[in-house]
Image 1 (cartoon, rainbow, N blue to C red):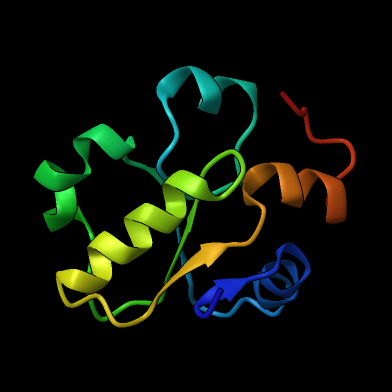
Image 2 (cartoon, rainbow, N blue to C red):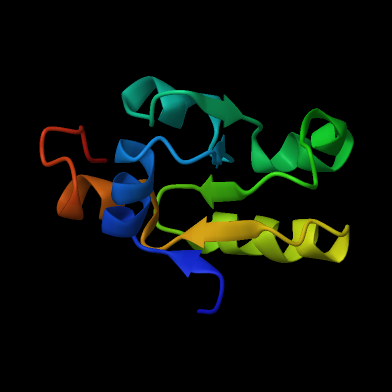
Length: 106
């Protein structure tokens, strides 16, 4: 999908300290199991009322468990004028498979 970023691509960007906002749209119980450091957590069901917490000028990578909910959030945010928003391909499960095998999978 256009606008996706692969787990390995995101890891490389984070390793280079490139500015990117990580937006976790999973439910609270999921964040207890595993998450990416320095993420902003806004559950998908709260996003409509919390978009003011995000800067539409920043690059945002949205993630969920497998990438389905985050893809919907990317489409929603683009509709609001967030031009630099991307989906983490495969979600956090893809990150665990491709980047961090020590991360807890569920």
